[in-house]
Image (cartoon, rainbow, N blue to C red; front, side, top):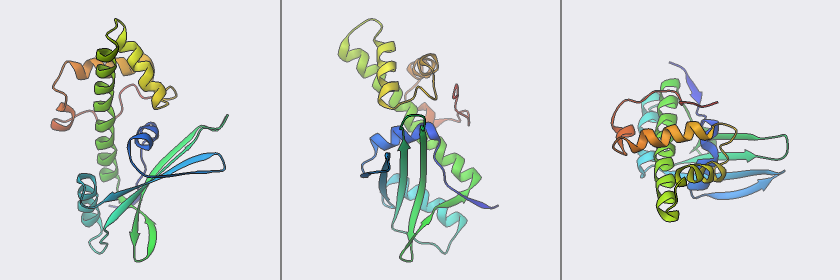
Amino acid sequence: MTNQQVHIREHLVPFLYQEFDGVERVFSGRKVKVVRITNKSSLGKWLTAMLEHTNKEIKVSNYNIYLSIDDREHRLARFGTFYINYRSSTKALELTDDHNDILNELLEDMFRISIYYFVSSYQIFYKKRGGVLEGIREYMSAYNLHEHFSEQSIRMLYYRAKESPKLRRIQTQVANRVTNYY
């Protein structure tokens, strides 16, 4: 098995950018955030286990997620990857394709669970009919998702989550591709 640099699915980058705490900078019109993940956190423990599985020699105390959003006119580009600090240098985190897919599925689960709670809270707070659609529009605007999803696809995700236990996504096997992802 060969290792590849870890990449985060493009539609998850704005979500993670806003929801993770980190250091933000702007370079040439590009917003960049570096997020530190300690190996004591649940995500850090998972990354450490996967790193040890692929390369037993590397030991790290933290990981950095590099998130970049370039939304200048005609240049919408989003990029996310993981780095490790190893032997006084920064190196791209490399995992197997399977582990990269699993990591993205975990991040996708966080994203989809947040959709349900955001839209539900929005509907309760505003106590309006049609609050679901308005909540979906707010969510899509907040995370700049119009490039990747339609309102209808987010609505389907919301109602699917509403009809089942909320943490079911992390409990049972789910589709390994993003449903209705452009």
